[in-house]
Every structure is written in structure tokens, then in C-alpha cells.
Length: 264
Ligand SMILES: NC(=O)c1ccc[n+]([C@@H]2O[C@H](COP(=O)([O-])OP(=O)(O)OC[C@H]3O[C@@H](n4cnc5c(N)ncnc54)[C@H](O)[C@@H]3O)[C@@H](O)[C@H]2O)c1
Image (cartoon, rainbow, N blue to C red; front, top):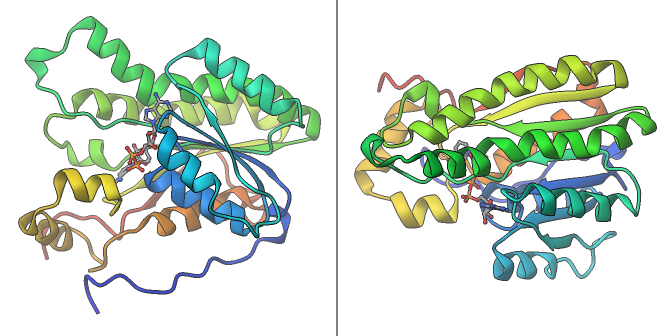
């Protein structure tokens, strides 16, 4: 029925994802945690990076029967030296096959309050690390004969949401980043695409922004009258990183339940 969460959700199985080495940034909570869960269930070897230690440690400990336990590493994505050391540590066990550039922070701000420091901090948490993570994994992927990088964009800048100018600036740039990386890394068999979520029902979104009016507005704006859950985004992520998508690169893929916004 419209608006209800469907249960249970079962992922398709992609045999080529078994044992793949996957890194998920911002994997401790929200959509990232859903993505970690999806790859663990494929039998992938998952490392996820975050700064939220408590939920991340809980997530890492929640798969006692998994073929590969997910590994949590504390890493502040805004600190490029820390990021580089973390990827060097991850690659000691082998090159990364799949990079999910998911970490972000959709903090609100008034235009008048933005200082140069705030600008830099915002772009650092929402954009810069996606490039440097890609730079870190590209040589190992090239040596293996290929790999997959998925950059997380957002529908927000298509909608021109209020108080999110810097976040939307970063998210718009990510689509250009995808095209540039896809161009420069394509000869090495590395596929790069953008995943663009619509309004996803995460614990953070529900805690910070839930109102009955807001829910009604989302339902009115989407063609499909069901809320998007992290597993819907994870399902697209699995497909795009699998061999089923071996001819997909340099493009942007929406999972937004058809957000036309006309309320019809
Ligand atoms: N939820 C939505 O409706 C929605 C819509 C469009 C796009 N997106 C995009 O999807 C992705 C995931 O969104 P979400 O809603 O799950 O976000 P979220 O804020 O709920 O979770 C982001 C994760 O990144 C981590 N993180 C934040 N700053 C970090 C840092 N400096 N270093 C390491 N980790 C850090 C957080 O701790 C958290 O675990 C983001 O790229 C977001 O822009 C989300």
C-alpha cells in the first residue's frame, strides 16, 4: 500500500561480487550502512570508513555468520593525510575492487553566514575526499585490470532546496568529477558512475527533518507513492558495481521514485 515500507527486502545475488574488496566511505550509518549490509550479504570483503565510532563498531559486529566480517576503520574523510594512510593500510591486504564514495554532511546554512573557512570545510566533507579516494585506489585497480568507483550525488541541487547552497555546489560538482574520472581511468578498465538518491528515509533524516507535512510533500512529489529506503539505493549500487553493468560508465543514475515535484 502507498507509503508503507515493504518487507522483507531481498537483494539479487551477483556471483562476481563474492570476495570482492569493497570500501564504503561514511559506511557507519544511514545509506552507507545499508550499502555495507548489502555487500556483506554478497560475500564481499567490506571495509568501511567513518568518524561515528559507536554505530560503526556496532555495525561491524553484527554479522557473526558472514563469510567475511566487515571491518571498520575510523577515518576523517576531510583529513587527506589520514585518508591516504588509511587506503595504504587497506591495500596492504590487496587492491580495492570497488570504491563507494558515500560520506557527506548536508548541514544547513544561511548565505550570509558562510565564511571562507566554512566553505572549505563544507567542500572538504562533501566533495574533496571523493577525488582523493579515487586517486588512492586507481593504481591498484589498474594493476588488477579494472575496478568500479561510485560517487554519491544528490537530487537536492535539481530541486534547489533552501539553506543547502554549499552541499548542492558539491553535489553538482560530483557529476563533473564522475565524467572526468571516467574519461581518465576508462583506459584502465575502471568504471566511474554517479548514484543520485532522491529523498531517502534514513534514521538521521527522520530524526532531524520528519514532519507529517514534509512526508505528505514527498509523497506528492514522487511518482511512486512509497518512501525510498537505504536498501533501494544499495540495490542500485550492487548492480552498478557488478559485471551486469560492465558497459556502464561516466553516467548518473537516479533512485528517486520519479521525483517530478508537480504534485500530480
Ligand atoms: N538521505 C537522503 O535523502 C539523501 C538524498 C540525496 C543524497 N544523499 C547522499 O547519500 C549519501 C549518504 O547519505 P545519508 O543520508 O546516509 O547521510 P548521513 O549523514 O545519514 O550519513 C553520512 C555518513 O557519513 C559519515 N561522515 C560524515 N562526515 C564524515 C567524515 N568527515 N569522515 C568520515 N565519515 C563521515 C557520517 O558519520 C555518516 O555515517 C551522501 O552522499 C548524501 O549526500 C542522501
